[in-house]
Image (cartoon, rainbow, N blue to C red):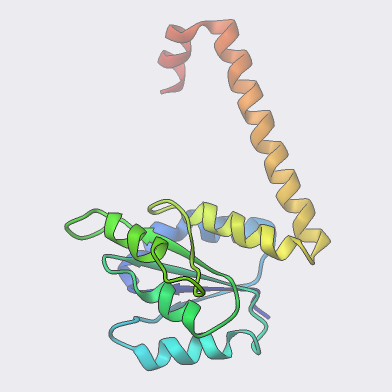
Length: 171
């Protein structure tokens, strides 16, 4: 049973979320991915959000560019947490999508991560699920530990090699 619902406003958004899909797989999170447009399929968007909780979803990740009303439509139709991933597209390169997610009216929040940053959306969703799932909590902790170790290794290499050699061998 899926824990996370990933809703794309357009199939063109799919290539931009691959890192997040891979992270969900790494964490063992169950998910579903749908293409549902707030503007072209509004009835389906409402039905999806309204049925999400009874279908076992715990978090919805909304992926959309340009006007990015998808997150708001979904959030208005469920009490589940909705995380918006603004996609860089159109004349404003994703800034319009950031504002659409960020400037929700009081009472209908959409959490928002950086432009094209599906990985952070998945991490936030995993942290929410980890509140009631010790297995996912351990995987999030392990991920953070791996990040820490990677930074420490890079710093040690920089200190040992100096910045010029480091740049030559790590760029």
